[in-house]
Image (cartoon, rainbow, N blue to C red):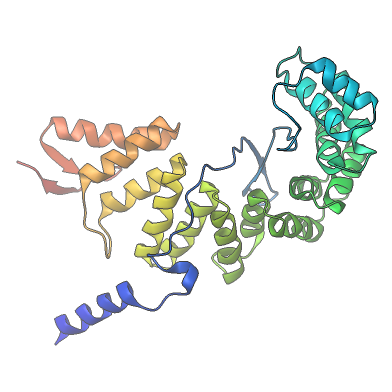
Length: 319
């Protein structure tokens, strides 16, 4: 009778009617994730993620336009030409990097109408980091705010970071959350991640915003959602979101998936070969802990035994 009860409970776990967005046959779209490479820490120690790269409108006119043609376009008060020139001088793409020129072109584009929000955001970055201009958090706030008010998602998230760090403004987590929320609902995955981090741990709100970030194809948001489900002991859903993160080439997601296979917890058969595969991928994606876990399993195979990493208890003898 006890075995029958356990079988029924496990079957319910597998086939319970999940919300439509949670069904296993309706996976989150797996597209190329937006690169994110700058980590900031909130006062609580949680990591807040943002983009530390200048952005430029996707539609910038015909490809192969020369610098001279862009300059002529900008001189005719074409905001697209000015924004593109600012971006090129900001990044050093196709031209010698020149922050002073980037600031001049961004300023001109920011004061126009079309694509002014992108130029304003990038101008805010120049002032926040002091690239080619005197570092000025007040001006950074002004330009991020202008970009956000004009509907640019990254500008909202960047402004939220200023409120978290107290740069140019008084530290205010409430205001930060408001701007992260604006960024998130404007489809900025970094804003969603930060909202999830600042929400009560494992709360429905944290789950909601992590899911929104994951649906925007951000691997970090996906494994954060997986962590929430793992804490709730819903290991099948945790595996699903760790797997999505890994497919989005997030090393932490791959490593966490490897951990599940190493432990072989409820609903997932222990499989060291699979664990090694995911640890190896995590390592290739620059996850140092994944490298260590892979090496441990690899070393154990040499001696003909396989034990769980970071434990002294032998869990399986292969020979």
